[in-house]
Length: 257
Image 1 (cartoon, rainbow, N blue to C red):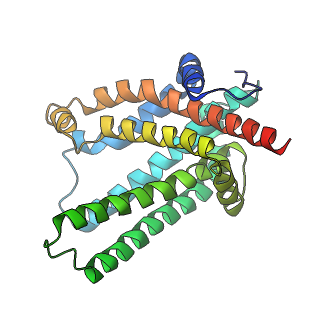
Image 2 (cartoon, rainbow, N blue to C red; image 1 turned 90 degrees about the horizontal axis):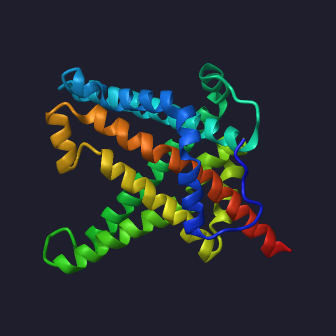
């Protein structure tokens, strides 16, 4: 079992500890990481996505569901390394996480709805301000930035909802309230923001919608590249989430005292 710190540490120390323990976590997560790569890149090696829009949407939806299932499973495995001496087999994990996965799926749907509602509201405001006609390019740019920043603020505030469903087995509304309390102070918020940025960096590295992503896809190197990147970054990310949650709890308890 990996020992959690019993006192608050700074952000650099959290990252150092995440890297320090990453190989131990990697050994337990490797099979899940391989499955993650297979789900993400299978379409590249099977001739690409179908031309039919509905078929494409169904396959994309199935991929998102499977990816979420694997992420929840990996977070559960990593958390047990910090909290229990008894480890489960991969099959036991996949069965055990089903309730929390279903709750996480509902939360993900909620996140998507929030995103769509923000976009619809911003579209209405931009029409009301006549920003879509192209007559005010600077105003349009600032408006887009404002919408993007607002979406980021919402997601950082709710970042720990899914981890709390897995780590603490909370109900959805309890996880929402707890995540909001964790991000209440400025220093806590910046720690969560750092994890959010790390997630964006991982996505930029493995996204097919980049120059290097397109190059990897054309040369059929996506799976190998993603396996290397995710093998390095996913264990660090899982550790960072768990260690940061522990750190935020310690900081909040000290404030109460």
